[in-house]
Amino acid sequence: MAAPQDRAGRLHSRPSWPSGPPVAPGVHALDVGGRAEALLAVPPGGPGPRPLLVFCHGAGGTAQQSLAAVAEPAGARGVLVLATTSVGRTWDLIAGGLGRDVAVLDEALERVFATTSVGRVALGGFSDGASYALSLGLANGDLVDAVLAFSPGFAVPPRREGRPRVWISHGTGDRVLPVENCGRRLAHELGGAYDVTYEEFDGGHVVLPDLVDAALGTWLG
Image (cartoon, rainbow, N blue to C red; front, side, top):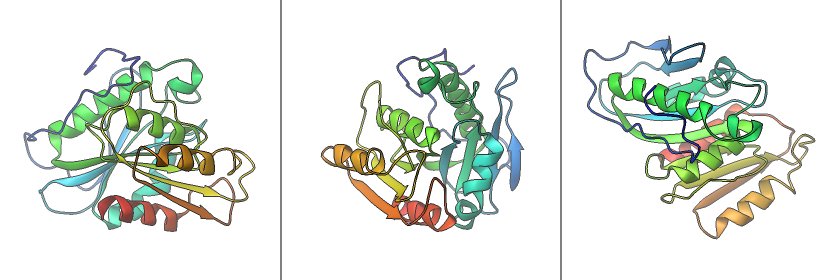
């Protein structure tokens, strides 16, 4: 692995000058060791630096589901998407403590940075994955410049590093993670320390393509 299991939630991999030919467009499975799963979606485009969105699925989800939720609108903007599948049913932070999933993600990032020119990084996710993205993103603001959280429940960063921009969306009809106790509360709590954009929509516990595009637009400016 690129780094030992990090219970402080730190991601150590950093963009570097890639070696070898550029990665061809399409979805690529990355070798991150063992049975861990990591997928990289590469849209058509030139060899220059591109934005990278790292996206975390909801509880019980997979990397494939993450790509299904965001890869099309991201690809239309020339954004690479990296998705890993949590080792357990949900992410390690929620299942008992940071460690294994952080190490898998760090290894996947190292693979991407070694073969692909990346100009900027955002960390995003849905539901449990959104809570995970917020928690890891606020702890790694020296790597990620934005966190895109769709229907998050909480944020418990083990430490805070940098000041990444925060984008949060939440459905007013969400019965899984009620908006009042989750999205609205988080936007209020984080707004004092970060540049927060908060969007509510008339709907439930879902990721909508229009919201993905709005989040990407806010991040990419």
